Length: 378
Length: 56
Image (cartoon, rainbow over all chains, first blue to last red; front, side, top):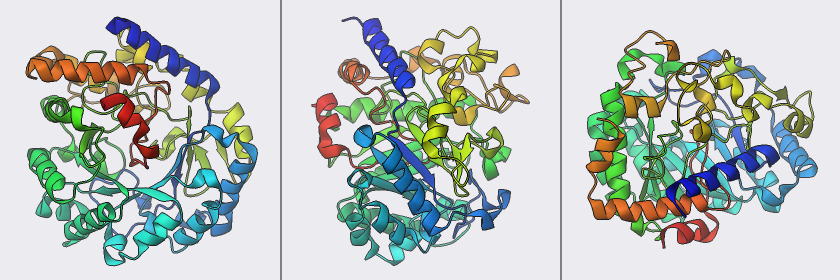
């Protein structure tokens, strides 16, 4: 089979998935509250009304409702995000309750590690309640990380939490948001993390200008973005033949977008396609139903679990996530990659269809989205 | 730099090996088996089936 045939097979599989859109991932934004005040936070608490947070019973009720209404035979996992999930005092109660369902026993939690480092006994309880993966953000070597997090000592806590999570047998992802102020440390951080924490995944994401991260001083230039991707390409190609071994640390580029037919599949252990609203349901802190908790709230919602039946919303809304043509504007209009990326990740789209940036255009054509004034009209 | 130059910077033998794995990724039954959302981390990979299928 030629390379083109493999790509076509993959594209056909994506189109089938879009057509059937089975619910496979629930991305639950557990809270917008946080015990840190990170400079680059994409979901800052000041943007929302915190008293609207779902109650314990509402959360458990929503997961029970999904279990009752959906075909769960294809369901894969729950991804818990925030804010900081561990500031919810009822997190364990919720996990204990929902993990009684056999298909809710593959749960991962994205955390800054502060609470976990101080309460290592939590790991055993988390495992008991179906948690299999922990993601911990470390955004640079000690001083850089602490500056970002707005608290001295947060690096040590994150490091300790990640290390203890690995020792507890959990699948650990260490995530780093690459930005203009830490780009020179990424390689050093990777070596340190791989040697001392030994997580399964070292994930690098390029900074998106949402939330507090809109500050221009953090945004990557096209050359810096190429440098980050170049680093991942080098590491992936050098070590990927060992990725079958669960003790190996894999590198991956987060879901910043499609990298083009030639480069995609060479910097991460998957081929990227945005799954928002296709197999991924976003359940936000206040019960709004979205497609992914990373999509800015200005983009709007598909429903509200306080008013709507989740299955009705999943079956009858989400059309803008499953019909891609409305995104075919600006750089996408005549792009030869369209048939595979379908306009890239939804968190980079504004409600009028324009996109904030495209990694493929940045890498292939050196397009510098942040030097110009706005979106893809430049 | 451009994609072509990026790929040229990788030793030929390593690139060829990675291309084999890429074809397996493209052919995998569930095309988004391992994709997660941006904030997310990865859960357990169901006993390593995926990684055995792609990288072994």
